[in-house]
Image 1 (cartoon, one colour):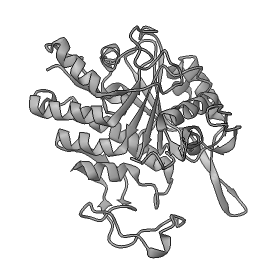
Image 2: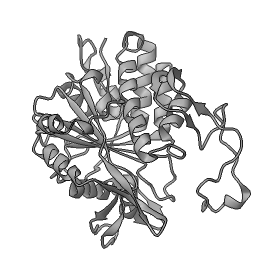
Image 3: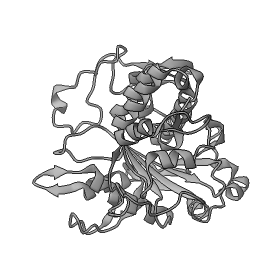
Image 4: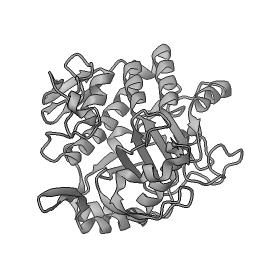
Length: 364
């Protein structure tokens, strides 16, 4: 009875809060220490600080970035970019995804010599990640991505952030014994077979230049409510090919997954089962790279202990694909998105959403 899954950190920020606190400091330190604390924002005073640089109170903005496991010789790409806004009352969470193919201005970055330019936002982490000798560091890349999202949204600075390893999601779900999730549209997997094994790749696509390099039987996810294994849940939320709204559908599925994981982690089946809870906490620590702006993962857990899945509002940013001479160039947001971003910065989202109910993801 001494832990909960903090869903607003992408369901991998495991904290000790809520209910009766029984665990001792050694237990708290064990799980806080399992998280990889890093300086994600290029601010040496943030990650790993011995003294807090700020209290966790008032409106908060959190940046969550999901990446695939990669070696340090591969350029990291931010396959999922999620911003969580916590209002001053700290009892709600508003979650919106930034389309990975959104065309934006990426600022210059002295650490890599990148001069800035216009590109898909998914590339920002890659432009910022080079550390020399053909090596890449996603932690350094996060810094440029954060600056890019700040420039896009007008948010002055994120209060905390995390890199979430997608491979870690699978371990967390498996540690919980699976997750029950409602699937809102039929989806076929681009990557996996019905048994969960990778689909074979076409020989002519060995150079990774093909849009669809796989062939053979596909795993399928049909409309309905199911209890998914880890590989199924991860595979489902990664799909966008063949969906009517492509990445916008995938964003919705990822947000739905966050809520489903939160409900599962807060269920009695997890929090009242010490052995299962221990596995979940360990898996979360392995999946997360965290910067709490001088505050530990446990501090953040206590500060946000009033937020539950029913207090989370899923936001969909309206946008459309840019097609030039029949060729896809990326995504663009509707003009009203600037009003939305201003409402986030000024902490007046309830008023904005009341006037723009179309921003609420009702399928969440």
